[in-house]
Structure formats: C-alpha cells, structure tokens
Length: 391
Image: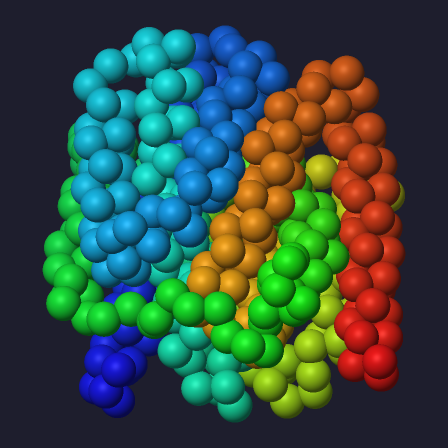
C-alpha cells in the first residue's frame, strides 16, 4: 500500500466505525428504555442486548473466511449494508420477538465489520505508533457509544423517532465504506514468524491466553455495564438520566482509549495492563461499598467499566498487531472477538438476573469477582509471554 492509502485506511476506518457503533448503541439503548417503560423485566431487556452479542459471536467465527473471500474493503461494505437493513427492520415495529431477531441480525453485520476493520488497521499501522492508532480506533468506538445514547433525549424532544436517527447514522457509515472500496487490503499470508511448527499455526499460542482475558473484559465493559441504564431506572432514575448514564459509559471509552494506547507506546503493554485492571477492581469495589447510595457511584463505576474495560481489549489488539500479521492476524482477531462476545453476550442476561435476584449489591459482588479473575488471567498471560521470550 502507498503512504496515501495507509493514511486513508488509518483515518477512514475509525470514522466508519464511530458512525456504526453510534447507530448500534443508539438503537440498543432505545430498545432497552422502551422495553423497561413497557414493564419488561431486567432479564427480558438483557435478552435483547445478548441477542446483539450472540450475532457478533456467530459472525466472528466465520469472519476470517468472509475476509478471505471478499477482502477487507468489500467485507466492510457488505456487512455495513446488511446492518442498515437490520436497523430499518427494528424501526418498523414494536414486537418483542422480532426485536430480539433484529438485534441478532445487527450483530451479524457488526461482527464482520469489527474483525475486518480492526485487523486491517492493526496491521498497516506503523509499529512505533500502533498504540496510538489502535487507541484512536477504540476511541471512535467509545465516541460512538457516547454519541448514540446521547442523541436519544434531543431526538425525543424534537419529536423524531430515535431508531430513524440510528438508520441515518448507519447509512452514513455505509457511505464512508465507499472511500475504501478500491483500497487493497493486507495480503492474507501467514508470516513465517507466526507459522509455528507448521502443524498448529503459532497464532493460536499467541491469541488463546489473551482471548481469555478479553472474555472477562467484554463481560465487564459491554456486557453487565450495558444493563446499568435499565437498572438505574429501577433504582428511581428518570428516563433522561438513564439515557445519560448510557452516554457516560460510552464517554469512558471515548476519553480513555487513545491515552492508554499512547501510554502503552511509552511505558509498555505489561505496566499499562496492570494499571487497567487495578482501576477495574477499584470501580467494582466502589459499587459494592456504596450499593445503598447508587446515585453518584453508578456514574463513576459506569465510566470506569466502559472506559477501562475497553482499554484491556485495546491493549490486547496492540499486542496482536505487534506479534502477528496477514491471515494469522485476521484469525487471531476473529478469536479475540469471539472470546469478547462470549462475555458481552452473557453479560446482559447475567447482570439482569443478578440484579433481579440479589439487587445492586449482589451485582457489584459479582463484578468484583470477575475483575479479580480477569486480573489473574492477564498476569498469567503476561508470565507465559515472558517465558516464551526467554525460551
């Protein structure tokens, strides 16, 4: 790729994904609020959120084959076009089973866009600046998570159906894909450095320990935390405040991804990862300690769970970009997204059930346990990486 093509990829993919995620989270937040106002239980609301992530999970398992067949640019465009249709179907009715199916369809498109776009960007980014560019990509995700829910109150005030706004944003993302249509993606070869012994490609050895970390990070960042707006309404928050809580969760991702990427470039991945898990442990502990006074702590904990939970995933992507390339990187990214969606798909249902059964204190206790498990997994993955380097 020419320098101009690389620059176009590095800046267009985050812009496309900002619009994509903004539309996605606007739609899912609006569905959660409508269902909650209609008397659905927290678990029923969680099922819709889980359907989105189950769709992403299914797409992630075949994403490498889709990219190999159509290439990075066409995979992005086709999946985004499919997502426009999925969002349009959600806007046409208010039927619960059909909303569950529509959320799953939206996830199918999102999973392909996620793997194709992120693997493309991680590979072409200059190694010395990979933390910045991957962080910028993840920042676009956070800005989308912030912008989407934040558009709900003004849309309602203007008498505009929020789901129609989501469809318009997704259509704009599709238009952005046209800028990349003729750009050649990375060659889908398996580099010698990642080939292992030939029988079992080395990308698995690199990706598997990191994927386990991402499962827990996904559960905390976009799984259980996605239930906080609905939970806040059950704790007495008005609808507008619940929507703004959803925006606050997105604000964490919007504000923290690029700084953590730059920090990884400067002080290394291991130290930055340790800082991230320390902050997640503090956020979960604070939610547990002040569970009886949630008015303030929900905002802070939501910000940290959404933002720092996302930085764990960002740091793992940076490491994959350093260590893999070509088909190995696409396959590893697919595995990473699969693992992440295991957490995010189970998170809304688990979070809703925990809250229904044990209240906010029980949910906070579970979050603290997940944070401890994730920190231990991250430490163990780091030890294995150091051992491999010594050998």
